[in-house]
Image 1 (tube, one colour):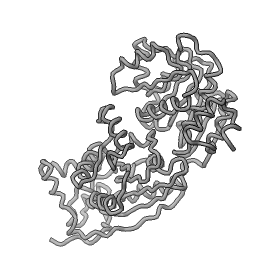
Image 2 (cartoon, rainbow, N blue to C red):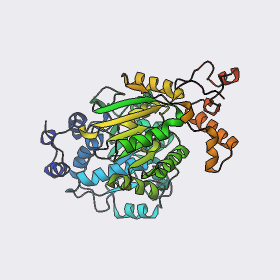
Image 3 (cartoon, one colour):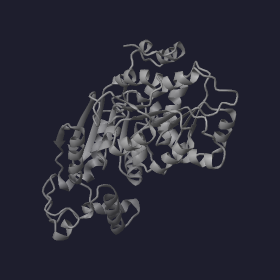
Image 4 (cartoon, one colour):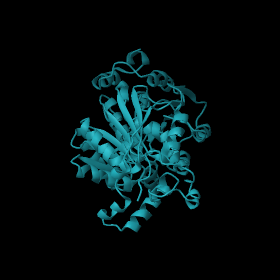
Length: 441
């Protein structure tokens, strides 16, 4: 099947060809015709299979078929969970709408609102926004949604995970009752389906692949390794295999900063990207990563959605996510548009249960190998003193990080003594370290 057979206009087909695409992906084949029919669509597909074009192309065609008026009110609203995804969607709207007389704009927090307000005054047909800034400008009387014809919720499951349900309901109340609704996501939870039933009118369900599956072209591997050995293992792998580009995920912002410093200290160019970074810093880090100015981007899950990096060869889970769905989105940054990719997970003793949960969720076994480490070669936890903290404060930080991320705090326990009954109260009783025998004092 070709894009021509989907009923798209010549202006859109020309833009698609310029982007180098000749055949639509399965989700595009199924969704585009139904959207062009004016149906509400509930669409599910794997990350990296063209969902953005799946709603952008028909949305632009429908808008171009009717006049926008001299003042250009907002006629299409696309809601996304993160700034990065909003920027990516807006870039796609501009690319595919290059030969149409439609105007688009992106709106999110973390930057000054003045340029966004001025853009609204000039007129906008397609507005791509995160919920917080959108509601803020509406409450200030600077934005009207009374003429929205098409609403798109992109990665709606992630929006619920991030606590946007209340904001979404507020936004829905501001929209005209007569409109077309599109909901696109990689996974559908029961909560998402409940949300869809509340605002969509007889939606057509389209699925390109079974839910919760990963892209087949991604080669997945897991290495069972001691937590303290993870940084040096990653550094050696990047150097020995001469990785040019890798996206590395950590659970916490502090962990991302810490790992980034270790990489840089070993001569590997790297930058962190997470919620504590300003939007300018995040944009610069992503641009440097795409251009090759840095080899490694160390990210929290804020970057798991919306990063479209062509031909990204490596994704590393330095720490496994607590939520299995996030694993699917993380590794989906590679293997995009049919290209091959490698996804590596570094799994310590406390993360084995998370690995099994991911395997159950995705209905597949991830090939794993055990990395045997001589305990004498591992850094002592007191080595944290070199960062300027005392040994006791390092231990407290380790406990806090573990409690926030893995749900346990046994990582702060000294490695050279047997588990005690008090350790068992923290979920570690009877567990044996798989990475080697304890070193004798």
